[in-house]
Amino acid sequence: MTDQAADQTPNSVPDTGRRADKPLPGGRSLTYRHPPLVRVSHWLNVIAVVILIMSGLNILLAHPHLYWGIRSTFADPWVSIPTIPNWLLIPQGRNLAEARHWHFFFAWLFVLNGLAYLIYGFVTGRFGRRLWPTLSDLKGFWPSVVEHARFDFPKDDHARTYNVIQKLTYVTMILVILPMMLITGLSMSPGFNAIGGVLLDLMGGRQSARTLHFISAALIVGFIVIHVGLVIWTGLFNNMRAMITGWFVIEPNRPHDGGQS
Amino acid sequence: MTDALLSRRSWLGRAMATAGVLALAGCERGIAFGERLKISAEALTYRAQRLILPRDALAPEYSRAEISPDFKPNGSISPAAADYVALRDGDFADYRLVVDGLVERPLSLSLDELRTRPSRTQITKHDCVEGWTAIGEWTGVRLETLLDEAGMRPEARYVVFHCFDALTQTEDGPRYYESIDLIDARHPQTLLAYDMNGQTLGVPHGAPLRLRVERQLGYKQAKYIRRIEVVDSFADIQGGNGGYWPDRGYEWYAGI
Image (cartoon, rainbow over all chains, first blue to last red; front, side, top):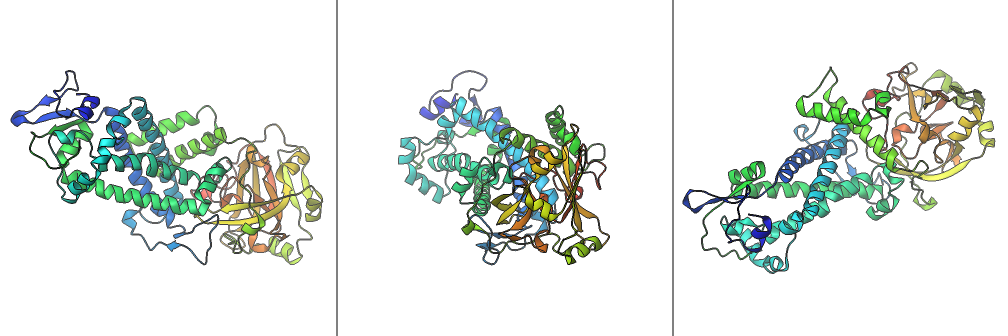
C-alpha cells in the first residue's frame, strides 16, 4: 500500500507489489511504514543527537553561565548551570578540547544526514503526505488531545497514519527545533559570523544564540523523553520493528472513539 | 597533522576515510579516537568556511556603547619571564618587534615605529572557546602592512606569533605561540593591536602588542608578541600543531 492510499483511505484494500500489505493470522496485517532512507537517517540522527547533547553538556561546563544579548555580563548571568554528573558527559569527565571534537564531528553528521532526509522527504512528497497536518487533521485536534490524555491509542487501521498531535510535533521538531540547533550553533562561530551577521542579529547576538542553543537542546531532550515513552507504551516491539525493518503490524479493526482520520 | 589537513587533494578523502574507519573500529595506527574525530571535523569546518567565506568578509563590528565594561583578561595576565619583566619595567621603550623567517627584509620595529604606520580601529567581539563573549575596541597596525614591508617569499604559508608568556606563569615554562594561514594574515581586520578601548594596551590584555584575528576564537588572539615568523610549515615548532593550545588538543583552525 502506498502512503497516498494510506492517508486518504485507511481502510482501502492494499495494492500489490513488494511493499504491499502482508496478511497475518488473526486478521492482523503487516504494513510498510518507513522506507530505507527514513530508517537509516533516523538511527544516524539518534547517534548524532545523543552524542551532540552529551558532548554539548561537557562544552557548557567550560563556562556554565548563560546570558542574553551580544556579550557576557559576567556579574549577572541569566542562569548558571549546576554541576552535571560525569556519566552524562562525552567524554566522561570535563574535557573541553575532546568534547569539541566529538561535538563538531557529529554536528557534521547531524547536518548532512538531516539534509538528506529533508531533500528526500520534500522531493518524494512524502513529508507532505505523512507529516503535514491537513485541515481535517486540525479539526480533530481536541479529540486527539483526549486520546493522549487517556493514553489510549489505536492499533488498528487508524494507526496507519500519524495523529494530529504527532504530526504537529514531528513537523515542529523537523522544521523548527532541529534547524534551530544548526542556526544557533553556526551563530556562535566567529568564522560564520563574518557572513551570517544578519542571522546573528536575528538571534539577538552571540550570547543569546548560545542561550537559545541550550534551550533548543532542552526541548529536544523533552521530545526524546516523550517520544521514547510513547514508543514503549504503544508497542515497543512493533515500533522498533517498523523503524528497523520498515514493517508495522496493524491489529484488526475494533470500535474506537479516538476520532482522527 | 595540520599540514595533512591543509592538503587540497586529500582533505575530503581523508575526512571520508576517517568517517569510514570510525564506523568500523575505534582507532587505527595508534591514533586516538578523539584525535581522528578532530582531524575529520576540523578539515570539514576549515574547508567549508574557506569555501563559503569571501576572503575579506568582515567580522561584525559594534558601537562604542556596546563595549564590555568587564572585558575578562584570560590566560596569562602577567608574564614572569625576565626578558618581559625588564621590558615592562622600562615601559617597553626597548621593545622591538621582530619580523623574520621567509621574508626578503627582516624587520625590527619599536612601538613608536609601529605607531607611525597607518592604523585601523575596530570594535569587535572576542569569543572565548569556553563560551563567553566580550566586546572591545582595538587599534593597531594591520599585519598585512608589515608582511608586505618585509616582503614574504613565495614559499610562505603561515605566520607564527612567538610570545613572551608561559601559561605556567613561570620563567622557564613553554612559551605561548600561535599561527594563522595567509588568508587570515592578510584579512583587513587582522591587527597587531597596541591600544584597547582608546588606551594603551594593558599588561593583562597582552601589552605591548597582541594579535586580533577576528574570525577565530580567543585562544588564537596571541598576547605579548615578541616575534613574528613567516614559515612554510610549523611542524618543527614546539609540539608541531601550530599553537600552544593546538599542541594540547584544541583545533588549529578555531573558526567555530
